[in-house]
Length: 171
Ligand SMILES: [Zn+2]
Image (tube, rainbow, N blue to C red):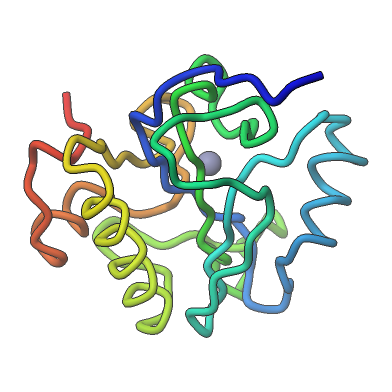
């Protein structure tokens, strides 16, 4: 089977692994969760940005502006043929609440390291350079039941990174 193009790369969606610092998220971990656990045919992400700012490729892709079938990731149902999905490792604290669930940040707090945020900024800047029409979004913006990536994405991208609102999904 040839590696057919399935869509134009329109969105880059930001996710988090929703894990505390004690959990090391890498391709092997995602294989257990997405492929073995969920039974998915593909990973949920193209890349993971680790706490130290290192970017780990999970699903290979080229940067031709299109999504081909081998580049598809199962990040957000209905958007995957026009999207690239990237994942910030973390998003939860080590502390647990009374029901044993790892705490997620309260409103306005960014639960990622400075190295990660700089790596994300750099990553998005390169995407913008390649495609001035790209739209960045947070997973929760397409699913009201989700909080992923556990921070206010338009606020970070616009107010902190200085990315134009024309490149940020907002409704
Ligand atoms: Zn997500």
